[in-house]
Image 1: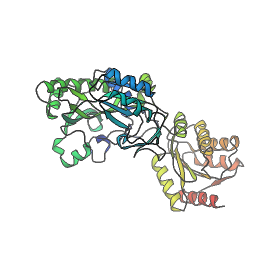
Image 2 (image 1 turned 45 degrees about the horizontal axis):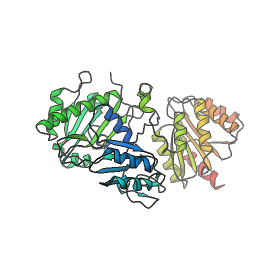
Image 3 (image 1 turned 180 degrees about the vertical axis):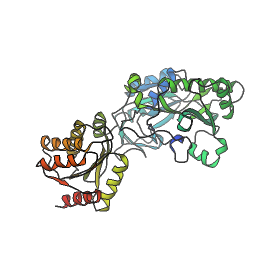
Length: 429
């Protein structure tokens, strides 16, 4: 039985399933989790292990290893790709001066020189910070010609309570544009979770994608293998774009993004062990260890909230009153005192923070637990910045008593507007 979908994250760019216009939107935000991030070569390895046709490739961490890999491939043309968790690599720029994180060459000897200008240098793309991301690994792969590109994905569709296949004969482009301009070119097949992908469904999808003759059966076989992978790794989405054919008559998955159900981590230990956290913000990574979600910003007022909607409202009202949020740290639902303590520890370690605003609306969250966590953190961490607290909801009277009797310099607020005014005023003082 396939697990329920909880949340997904796109590795490189928004996908068809997540666009507002899409009839296949999936996922709901139930718990603040750190989503699994895999590098391109890791996703390709998962596909390869499931019998899915991908380009031959090697991974290298040094320029000499990259050169050896290029020679071993013995391919007519080689593609060298910098491995970072960001899109737009092809148009990126390295601080070594090299332009482009993706390079094609027919000369294996060139690969070593190119890799030496990638490895150890920062690659800046439209999806990275100004500093870029340091490249530690490159993928050396066989470059195949593509005679035709299509789009194929398997994803969870809440309206059908299970997986669906989505495909289009127009691939290699933004599928959202195809769906908007030519919706008749989007094909869907609902998959029975107990029966799996039937032969007739796979063949029909392959035909709709424009594969003919022997290529149709080859594409259908790849579709079934992709579904096997989808089940095996507890994916919420497997998207292949382009799902193409070569002049030599091969059906190949040239690029893919796999999204995983994080709630299946307990049975996907090997997959989650590949999680690349080296590119993540250290504070975000530490917050995730305690079941917290942290988003950093450029201001000086830390926002300590429960729920993403309340976090955004808090940031907006701080800005309305002339302040700037430094971050927001979302407690989520079943919070405990230790999490509150660790949250304050993270916030107080941020040198930009000049005041902390706590805005908790207790429904599932017990305000008394929050209050106990706050007082413990203030005493043990010897909090130096002003602290404004607004609590409302479950057990709020007990929470206010705890804060009042603590004797700590905590400024109470009656509502969110009052809290924002007091937080901004505290910094001006």
